[in-house]
Structures are given as C-alpha cells and as structure tokens.
Image 1: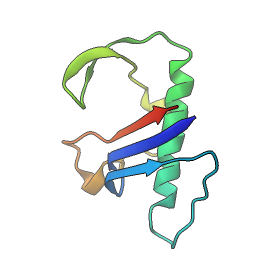
Image 2: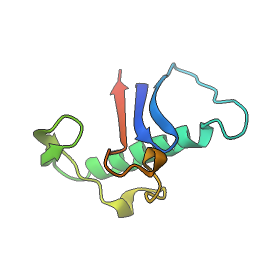
Image 3: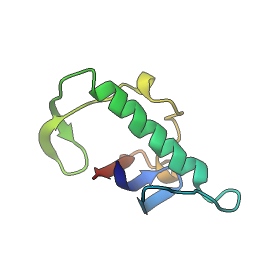
Length: 102
C-alpha cells in the first residue's frame, strides 16, 4: 500500500507531500489540484506497469546525481500529457513523483 507521495515540480505542485491511510477521500474547491494529484497516481501506475515487465538497468538519477538501478519510462507509456508537466514550465528542473510503500 502506498503510504505517502511527494511531488516536486509536478504541474502546479512545486513541493507537496500527501500522506495516505487505508481509506482516503479527495475533496476541495475547483482548481485546487485534485486532478493533479490523480495525474501523479496515473503516472505511478504506468511506471509500475512498465517496471514489472522489465529488469532494472543502471541509470543516471536526476534527483540525486547518482548512477543506480532503475527504469526509464517511455513517454508513450505515460497516460497524461507530458508537455506541461513541470511547474511554471521550468524544464531545467525535472518533475519528480516519489512514493513510499508500507
């Protein structure tokens, strides 16, 4: 089960964390980021679906500048538009979604 998700430079979420319980309800006014949170979950689902089919390879992690085992997910596997995924259209900083499992 996913216990927390941290969004960095992802759409309107410059630096945002979400902590999850067994049951969660997402509510709020229009234009407050509910769809952005769900888009992040869609990206995680697509990454998981890709990762279970392939073995990890050594990649350069843009988040901490280390070479480590991981996956490069093809853009064609991501179910959302990736053109405007960085906050303020800042393409010099990667959009990152990190999650923790229990």
